[in-house]
Image (cartoon, rainbow over all chains, first blue to last red; front, side, top):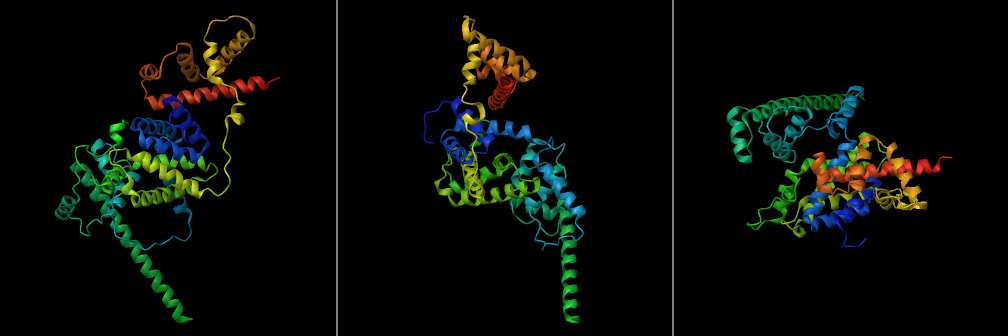
Length: 183
Length: 198
C-alpha cells in the first residue's frame, strides 16, 4: 500500500476496515501515515477509543482479566509461589487501579497513577511518613495528599503480601531439602 | 483527544528522542494498552480472554522494547502513539502463525457501492429502474435500528457534514465516523439479506 494522497474520509474508512478485519499490515501502514500527520493521528486514536468502547465491559477490559485471574487463583489447588521482588511504584499503581482505590480522586491523581504504572522505582522498605516524603521528592511527581495516603496503604499491603510469599517459598524450599535428605 | 495532546514535547525546547518517547509512554500508557487490546482482539478473534491478556502484555512489552531501541529515529515533534501502534501492529503480525484471511470488499458486500446507493436514494425520483432501487433503499432504511437509520438519513438525506453531525449528536469526529461505519454495515447486512430472501 503506498497511496499517499488519500482524503481523511478514505483514511478513516480504511482504518475501520483494517481494524475490523484484524488486518495488521494495513494497520501498521496506517499508523505510519498517522505518525506523519498529527491530525490523522488524533482521529485514529479517537476512532480506536470508540471502537474499543463498543467491545469493552462497562468497567474496562482490564476488569475482565482481573475476574478471570481471581477465579483461577480461587480454583487452583496448589498455589503458585513466585520469587517475590521488591515492591515498585508500578506495582502499587497497578494495585490501586485493580482495587478501584482511585474512585473519587481528582483527574490529576488518576493521571499520576497512570504515569506510575510504568515506573519501576522500588518503594522504600520502611513506609513511615518521613520515608515516603523523601522518596516522593526523588520521584518528582505531584498528587493530592489523599492519593498518597491510598498509595501508602496499598504499598504496605503489597509489602506484607510479598513477605508472606517469601516466607512460603522459604518453607517450601526447606521442605524439599528435608525430603531430599530423607531419601 | 487532540493532535496537540498526543505530542508531549515542548516545541521551543530541543528534546532527547528517547526521553520524549518515555514521557509519551508514561502519559499515554492506558490508551496505548487499550489500543493494543483492541487490535489483538480483532487480529486473534478465537483467543480466550486469558490468552488475549497474555498476548497484550507481551505485545506491549515487546513494543516498548523495540520503540526504545529505535528511539533515535523518533521525532519528538511528532505524535508518539502512532509510532508505538505501528510497532505494535508489526509485533502482532509476527505472532500470527496461521494464514490470515482478509475480508475483501468482494467477500463482504459483493462489490456493491452502498455509498452511491444511499446518496442516490436521497434524490428525487425520475422513474424507471433507478426509482425502484431508491424505493428499495428507503424500505431497507426503515428496517434498521433507530440510531443507524437516523445517522444515515442525516448523512445522505439531510447531507450534513461530519462536523455538523458530530455537533448535533454531541460526540467526537472519530466516534461519529465509527458509528456511521457501523450504520452502513447494518444497512449492507439488511440489504443483502433482503436480496437473498425469496
